Image 1 (tube, rainbow, N blue to C red):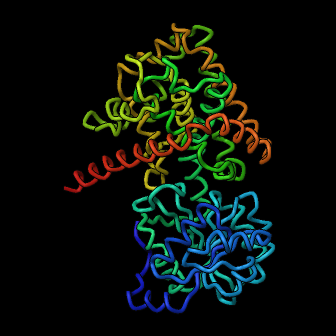
Image 2: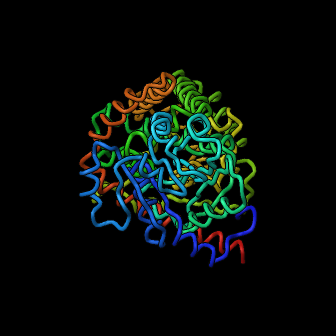
Image 3: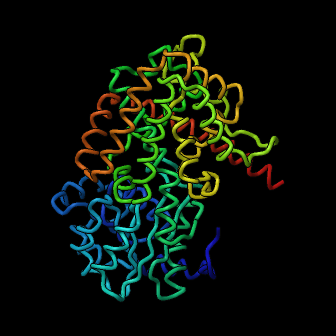
Length: 451
């Protein structure tokens, strides 16, 4: 999608860069990413973190080309576009503190992963003359912004110029801009992220429970296993609030995470009860509903040979042990039960989601592989302990989200994060390379289609 309306001229953008100030409240990973990219593109940027860390922030960012101010009051008073880059849990409190200081005629936006509480806070605490145009980069701070989805939400603008101004500012990220309402954004982000996060968070907790690093075990060999391990550790290399905000504040995410826990539990129950035909019927029915629209000429995004390159084990043992892949069966079963077609929102999907879609697509659209998976699930007990721990983990994450308890979420996340800490840096590096190569394949495929 392109900008809805007339684009600003180059002369207008040059004028804005010389006369307008961009303010960022919250210099966490994403706030810092934005501050640096805007500054590099010639915009005048000011920012702040917590007031009690002002002196520390000045020292920390002394070599940056943007200005550190004491607090959100100072940022709000001088900025023409203000971005609240804070945790979803804190958005209401922070906007209540600084909203009244917003410069007359300014535009305000936020970066939270769930827009309902963000928009509610803006409507409650901002002066009525303030325009609200929010944004959300659908990727983490360690991902190159070029080509990634960037959602722009025009909730309350009063002029074409304001929309052009925000659009021109965001253009420096070289992202694929998508224009949605706050409600559309929250539904789509839940569809593309909630189940993905639940699956990989649960994998990490299950491995932690068995006190086993999967890349050191003979059971976790092969391309699909490499992808699952790398994505799980990639999530645990980030900060807990990146995922807690989406899961806890988004009602659609609650429904999906609960469904995932139910799907995993019901599939595991069929496995241990030996109800092979019922399990096969359910899985194949989910495959037809989610992937049935793909024709015989459809080219799968991923394959085992590609994913085989990204093992954390420097000397992996020979051979691959068949796996029940309960985590992947649960995802597709959940999509089926919730009537979600993952391809519908591909333009708004995160890098992790696109890789995960490729992984599930590979499993479900490779007949021999899916049949092998079902045979293991029904008659091979090699992964039963792992599947049990995974089922318990999925149910536990669902409970944490349903309680809406950020402290409990943080505790569980960081306990598992500490378990994997020795390997997170290397896993993140390997994961970045995996994302880069896969996205190159996506780009080549898109270019081939255009030809």
